[in-house]
Length: 176
Image (cartoon, rainbow, N blue to C red):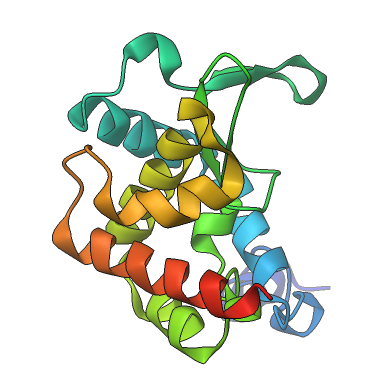
């Protein structure tokens, strides 16, 4: 074969695709799975933001973040592989998780709470989540946190207080 033709063919070729072709990419019909995938890919910046926000709100630095050696996490304020919104330890350490990215997290609380959470900015979801975990860690439990997060002493944004109120109201309607 003519060497000049091979060179010309090389430059006429269309570039190959980089990465997974669109036909083989997963379709995210499950918001929780999508939130978890995003959280795992961006765990480091999300952890930085959540930890920073907890410090801005005045939470004791010794109460920020947890460690999960079984998942390779030495210390983090954001746990990407969990999906319930957040958590706290018996000694009062707080964390948030991929649930804050899931628009369907509060679907069980009815349309008003669900719509408010879906439309809320991420910073308000974070503030509301921090307030909830903070109140729960004070020793009152999960129901106590739902009731008291909207009036928390933490200086959260007003929009986050309103979001916490709607979540509380949805939880009240759900309970018998």
